[in-house]
Length: 449
Image (cartoon, rainbow, N blue to C red; front, side, top):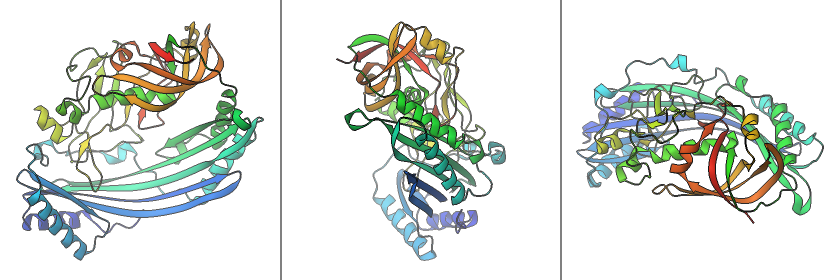
């Protein structure tokens, strides 16, 4: 982590100076971080990088006008220029009746950052990451049938976020993360296939064994050899956890407060109604211990908490920041997110669908004919109508067995209908910011031969 040159006292002084320059209110976010990454291919190092950086974002409000400026230069001269430019821009900005910082009553007051375990102590050195990348690729290439490699990567990073505003909020937190990945190739000529495996965690000690990651990548690649095309059909599909999270992601997009306020969502009139089957629960939890997107407060300093977006199939809330909540006549859910150079906007944190009770193997056994999807390509999802169409590849299911790999298929349906038939397996793991177990969705249209 680079040594911070923007203490809380210095940031609050910046805000006071912005008010003296003509701002009615202001807030500032300062993000600094360090990242290390290595990459190798066929046993040769291709990348060995270390980066350190910091960005300061200042938002000023004059009446119902606002402007955001950012800079990586935090010298006194640069900060003076930053304030001057921000105030001048705000004076000439169009009015936004919904903009504004949080009321003091909405701010996070008590939280235990240490309990969230957001940041690994110490730093993962480059030698360790080289060891991870080497072991991972060697394990993948050692499997018979693997003919080439697209390389392996390992990385570690740490960041610190400092947020302050003229409403009295001033606090900070730090987070870290590590990852390992590898992608390999099997077959030759026009019959080549590729696949990958990947893992990420807040603490490097929670990562899977690099050798296991490499072996799994090789196994997945070999299973994809000699894919077939299938005839167009109307069948159930099963989504592997690598792609099942996209279904939860489509829900979060449909209930984002900004889209709801604009009237551009197929779930616009669904609040309080049964969107999923009664056994489905979908949760956003910013306080998940060692969660990849955990944070003690949102990007506006508003208190955040674990929320059921879907509870027993019923839509319970929109995902809102202050602006979208004001448009909708509601209260922020503490889901604001922002970068140094951008305005706040609604976003989820650790979003996941709760697991079911059936195993993935038993889920497959229940299907006479269907498709097990491991990869999706492209996206044609209409957020207004819910119409869904994506390219896919995976394995054909026949009489409860995965019988052969398939490719060049388009999977289509409507998200409203798809949500109603979702059945989760019991294999939920937390590998990404948005997670879901293996999912079964009935009644999908496959466009093949």
